[in-house]
Length: 594
Image 1 (cartoon, rainbow, N blue to C red):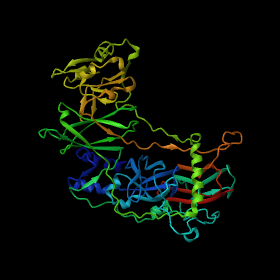
Image 2: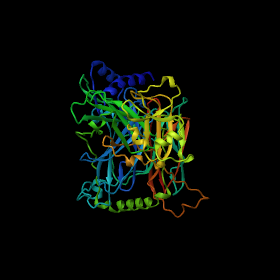
Image 3: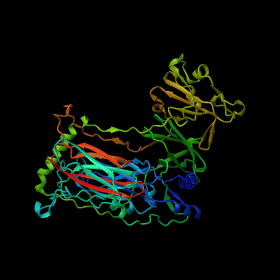
Image 4: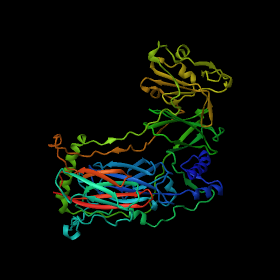
């Protein structure tokens, strides 16, 4: 906790002054502070290194403190990217790290061509290190729906000459590969199973002392092709632990860690160069189920930063300059930097013409399985959506409970007890809120006015708004501090169907897109029951029998259950994870379905 406090203390000063994608060290003290903060590294457990079009890539993210090899509590956001050999991104996911853990998936569409790809994982904090320190895993893609297979087709070679179809022996006795000395074992009750039959895997502690940790497990049919070996957790920790701190000096730049959530960086530029760019107030409004408003100040270069520390259910936010000169500035948002990969060594996956029937068969099974996907849906684990930023301590008026008046001004005057209007020293009409402590009231302060989650500066414009379009009015009497600004209470107005933003035509508002982290899923698990015949006539062509990304090891034994499908052959159980003390766990076990 103390270490985390030091990290926040160091970056509070820096972030309040340097709101850009890369910040700059101003003195030796900041450089020294940066060097004391642990860096991070990422391991990804994913379900396959060969992906067919129309199938899913599943992954589990483990983010570690590079200093102690424990799960990191520094970054709250990680980035997972799939890139091709031209270093173009196929997808880029933002996932929310919870105690260093995250998960996600990607459905491979038919427009991604066959070829060799890299799965990359990193945090923004890791951008300070060479990108060779990012997680890199090889994934090959086979797209039978596109005619051009030249990138992966080995011409004029027979099947036997390249060994493209794996002739791996059954590994019934080889239960664990490179078993780590961590006291964890994995067992199966049988070696051979029938179609649609139950399977139980037991993960247990062989030591007398308790072991806790986080695991992920994949059960999948072994590939009929020679594919790249996936990096295991043991491989990951056996890599040379190269120091991730690049040399930093005063004046050099660095990336901030996303310690509380997503960071939004931007710059203001004046239309007239006589206007200042330093210490200008900027407001961010995130309208949605959980309205959020933030206010920050620019640095001497006109740069600012917003920290979205809460989960939102919207895809856009509005940014505006505050004050009477708001129209005199332009706003620019700095996008996440494109990662430059100087050199990547891709696996050279190849197929032969003799494998055509195997590929067609697998593709047909995929298509049939996808047809019945709506009968086997995954469920999204809805993230916690926070209440409005000002909390629940408010007084509320639902306007349908009262006689309707034409305008908002008339409505608050006649109905809302505690809210009124007056003119300020400039002669402009403003709302006022009768506070709990009238003697402390400051006439130079105004309430914070919010309409459908958007901070509104011109009160007069809202006073004449059609109250018949308004659903409710809420207000808080107490003085409210937001950023460096003080308000005499909060007045929040919600329209029917939240339509106000559609009619908002102000050129000083800048609309920026938000890329929310991917929602976590609870993945469908097929269950067969003798008393339930609903699946009897539905084909089951699952190659992936189980993907369970979040297994918590708390007791001496953990049992994981699943059912086999209609696909016969050899299957691999892949268990990866880490104990709470940082020891890697990597196990493989095999069984057959006949």
